[in-house]
Image (cartoon, rainbow, N blue to C red; front, side, top):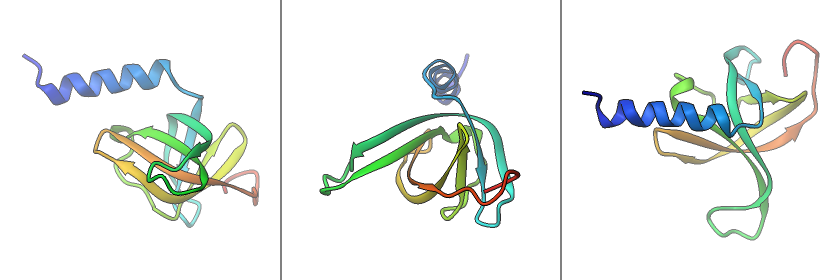
Length: 110
């Protein structure tokens, strides 16, 4: 019999497989690739979850798809490089990152 975590992992993969905004690549601050072909969701100009008076962009990633990440890294998605500003939420299942659009420095990595 499968455990609850195994069933939840399957559900997360299914949800991100169906409800995603495309694939992304995760980089550390030095521009080294940490993970590729990540299914992500991108929410633009949403209210900050802490009810601060500001709007932010949030990229959500299935936490199981990334063994580690750099809080000062970046994410390349749909030809745009997003700099990670803050961790909005990390419940061990879904990682939500506050991101800002970052000027692309080269064609090979952010």
